[in-house]
Length: 354
Image 1 (cartoon, one colour):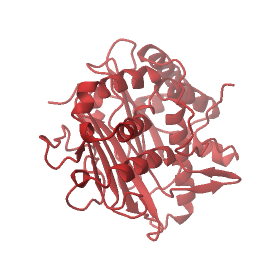
Image 2: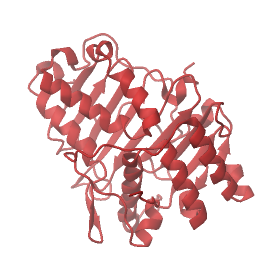
Image 3: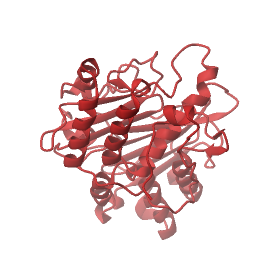
Image 4: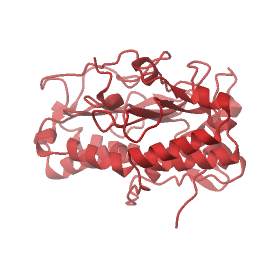
């Protein structure tokens, strides 16, 4: 059966919360509709045709490094966004944007977006500072004119999520991809949400498995992802990363086969978020024997990810994934998650590395 996807702001408003709240042990694969540059460009043009003139003007930005790297995980008052606001779309426009998202994301990526936005619906009544917690405050932007053969990016940007999907660039790219959530688990009606359960579960299993290795322990304390964005965007791009062998964690080659399987499983929880046309070639690159031999796993804090400061990192020749547990903002007695997936060669399609 084909599921019709509805952005969470509209879904929650109509009582149709769509995120499944799937647990990490759920073996369901991340299926995808047909995707790739051609279908994405066609769906993007259909979406643009559904917009009014002013909406079209703000949705398409120049294909440039300043435009591509302009994203944040902060609420909109702290980091204003550009593009068309999902909460302002008509039902017809919503249908068009859902069709577009299906060409760029797997069903897991769509469900995660829905769940993160639903979490903002839970935060909205607690927004005493007026910083913009709201499932409506998520934006769609095109960096460059959508095309079947020329470079452009689809950007989905809001509190706790940043999807940067680039087509027709030098490299297949779905990064930087930031996702986070607060609250970690919640209910809307009779449906339980736990949007980052698959990622948290995979990293928890991995951290627990390698925590006994002295080489896995990372020095210092962690309060956030180290290769994230700022209120002004991804201003540190191009990013520098650790080199050599020291201080990066335990080598994949030093792990048991069962531990190695946990590394690969954790990687897929992020890499499977974009459409399969994007995720399959990326995972093939990340998981070659040569690449895995140069991959490291580092942990800090509590491996059960129950306490602030708990941190897990996968660091390969290209792939970089960070998972951090922080105190919740609305209720500091609880926790919330930040994560980021970056590609050391292919962020923004590899177009603006210099």
